[in-house]
Image 1: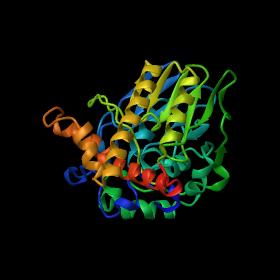
Image 2: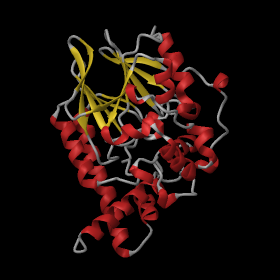
Image 3: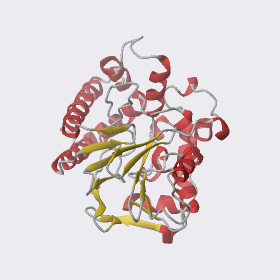
Image 4: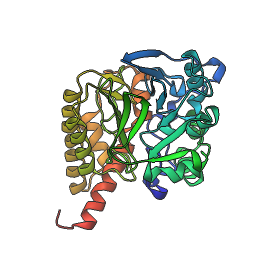
Length: 342
């Protein structure tokens, strides 16, 4: 994808909608969408169900409370009305939000940034260095997304409005975002899923906001699936990022997809093993000249009837096997090109 910052699918999949897209219902109007759950999940941490596509427990944002409250993840542009209503219900007015952080600039995490920045004119927008320019000028990112998603871009995700350059702050690894005199979010650079990915560790609650670095585990599905999309998935970097998270000994992990996990080290160990397994199956198929997506589906997809169709559809739309296969294929091809002996 152009500049390496496209959505979950890639140029390799251009013209093909994400898995399950042909079964998507028409997007609900804003008036028809429920507010979405607002739940305190840790000390001063409020989970906001941003209701992508009107679906519950698929995409989450998190409000970190304090004298200078900070929002982690905006969700997609289509989720902005829900998000703003949730923040208003918590008493967060236009002058109250101090910061907005996105773990990376995929549209299901950052598509609402421009709209949220406009709604909260005093909030600083924090992002990884490699994603900053695309928040300021999202034209190429949105164009890439439109080529991949087609009509689904507008019906499910929405687009991305520009954020003024003077509102954007580039996060350095280890930098702290102040929430209050005794509370901050520590940036943890965590590439692998995307080169512009950063985690955030809350110094008060101990919660680590993991974005997509750990993978996708929807509560209604119950299976952890790695997120290995093109264009810049890298296995070694992804595994290193998981080790960095574990070294910080978080009290819990907050997943964007979805929710708080109270056994963080167990989940990080599971994520490491699952990611290695997916890579091994993909590499074996790659060496045999077989279709990687078919191999992954045979090895890891729940058997027919194991999941209600609705839950399978949500998982496949958000984090489909074909998108993950394209990312693994791209990584394997790049590795082979750089070292033919591998």
